[in-house]
Length: 321
Image (cartoon, rainbow, N blue to C red; front, side, top):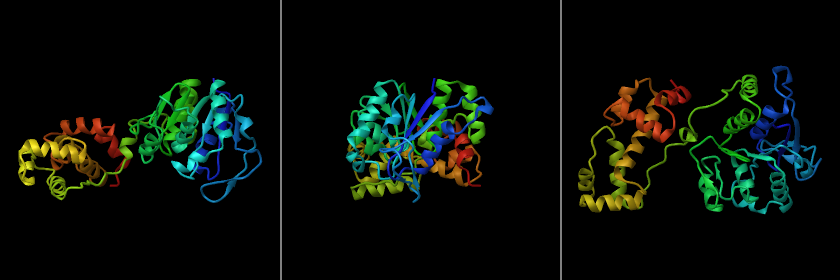
């Protein structure tokens, strides 16, 4: 049961993520059947102002001692950066986090707050996530952490990590549901006017990568593949365009892109389908054929596998028409 919640904030604290902690745990919603939480905003030193990311400031009422006895510690990210800038964290901060966790506190990081938990050693050997833009950096800096950039949050028992920004709402409501119950989570979500649970993962929010290639010949082939997504593209045809044998082409393609021609083409077709679902009112059958899929069923299969939601769910979220 969560009764005492401590939100740890540092300089350049991310305003939205701090707001998530306050909205879910800091507002009195007892009239809606939500239990009252002992909510504390804690900083390195009590009473010392900390910069907000928008240029104002917040004054934590408690210092690191406020983490003691907390059932839940929320690590709010700082806009100082997600990477080397966080390696100079005060050892006392990291010690306070380790101590709180050892004493039984659940740890919840929001967005790039995962870097702070990782610096404290609390992600060692654990599955975790962070904003998709920072996932590669987190994986590089802390290779023992098992980073999954495809999900909205990861629940690993006593440590919960959320993906970027609004995914913190998903993780916080999940924790409320897990520790207190669905009725309470639904009541908080209703007051916040957000869905109690969202489908899919953060794959659906990742921008389309620009095809890159160090070999000019392969760069031309990749461009041709993207420009002719609605056509059949057997490896033999692609190899001919590159002036290679099919076997040599497949080997070189994998070395250049890290995947096979077939899988790379499927990814590009799914990216194109996302654009059409966002910007047109074409039905799924037409989207499928425009992007080179033989049927809407095949599009749905690959879309769900790569994006994490169905084409219809994706359109409802991102459509601009």
